[in-house]
Image 1 (cartoon, rainbow, N blue to C red):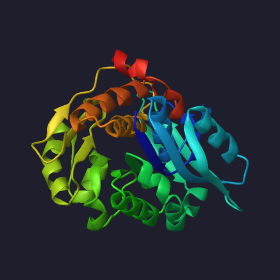
Image 2 (image 1 turned 90 degrees about the horizontal axis):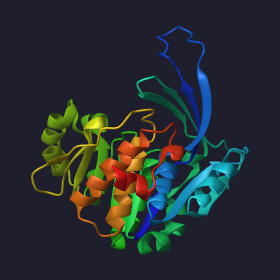
Image 3 (image 1 turned 90 degrees about the vertical axis):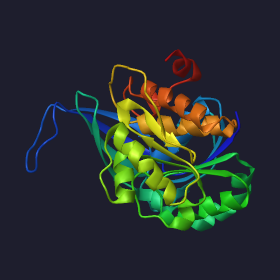
Amino acid sequence: MGDVFVVGSINQDFVLSVERRPTPGETVTDARLATHNGGKGANQAAAAALLGASVTFLGRVGDDGFGEPLVRSLADKGVDTSLVQEAPDSSTGTAFITVTPDGENAITVAPGANRRLTAEDVDEASESIGEAHVLVAQMEVQPEVVLRAVEVASGNGTRALVNLAPPFEIPQSLLEKLDPLVLNEHEAAFLLGERVEGVDGARSAVPELLSLGPKSVVVTVGEDGAVFSGGESAKHLAAPEVEVVDTTGAGDAFVGALAARLADDAPLEDAVAYAVRAGAAAVTEAGAQGALPTPDVVEAL
């Protein structure tokens, strides 16, 4: 497959499995704790690499002891981590995730060293970005970092994919350079200032999202798959039915798979179809990176 350059976050995840989430002021006991490698950027980089793409990752970790094992694990998955550095006097990004028996999750993130990545760091990596087929970025690093990365990619003919997660107000100048903009129902609602729910809601939202400037749009709709458009009428691709264990890494598996296929010059519809299967496969295992599928798993769905 082609080359993918990922700019993004790298986190240590602490996952609490609970029967139910506490209400305000309440304490819930008997939770089970597990630790996983995470961060949207790292997850998406690992997903693309496991699916055969040649992946380079630009990010930052802290000097607190958590970072080095996370970077080593990415390298073990085939990701080029030569551009990942320790930020002095900083903690590694951390995510605290609660998962209920239905597989749904709620996440709180302490960004730590992820916020130490700068636009100047992007400029120093501009040659590598220009050599990639696809740039992937999310919003767990500073918005100006994402903006600069997209500018560098656009100036070098590299396709720019931004996953608007978590949602941020972003300028039209950035949106106009995206192909595609990838977001879920909640992120689409944030961007449009109106409710977006389910497949029908995503179908209605896609033309509005395209009017903001991106060349193509992909809206994920959970277990119902994804709705997408490259300028034509919106299409829906359903997800295969699977047994849900943990939805934590589904979105990142989707984005990594989408980037891997787009880097291989696949048409958008083919890339989305592949990504839908990858996202479905990821919910059948616990954790984020530990649940990322291999090509054999994706093809079996």
